[in-house]
Amino acid sequence: MKSVWIVVVAVTVVAVALTVPVIASLVTRNYPRSIAPIVDEVPPTCPQNFTRLRPQTRLGRGLRGMLEVQVSEEYKNKVVDILKADPDASNLLNQGYNVTGIKPVFTVTVSGSGDVSLKAPRALVVLKSSSGYATVLVDVEQGKVLKIVTINKTVIIKS
Image 1 (tube, rainbow, N blue to C red):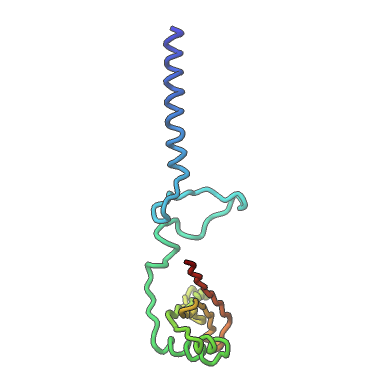
Image 2 (image 1 turned 90 degrees about the vertical axis):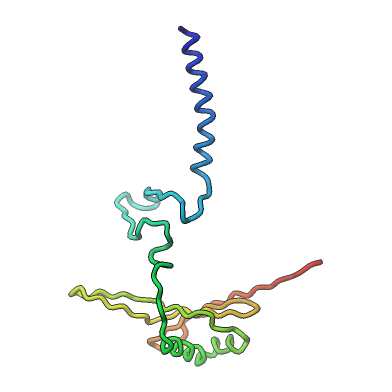
């Protein structure tokens, strides 16, 4: 009878020794974002009554990619005019940067009666040149540039 128990224990140890690495590799595998498993645990820095405000989906961040926004030519022209009026932004345009994208930044306001209004008081402008990129945050309502961030690239080819 002892030999049967020894065989059972040995088989169990071998089975556990073979399955634990397989399970560990599945758990720690770097999944692509689109098929990564959803983990519903509270981060250790958050209180226990913390609830997430974002939807639990792996299809992207919120509605990005699912909501297409068409920007009118009037809005684009207004943003470009503000860029040309700002000395730093116009300097970038004169250096060869081209406007490759204008993305409105939305604000949603809910009134006390429950009415919802949607506005685009700011725009994020993407500029591109052969030497780098620039993003410009434009306040359309006030007609001024709020922030400019440039990223320059340098390529060194060694033979």
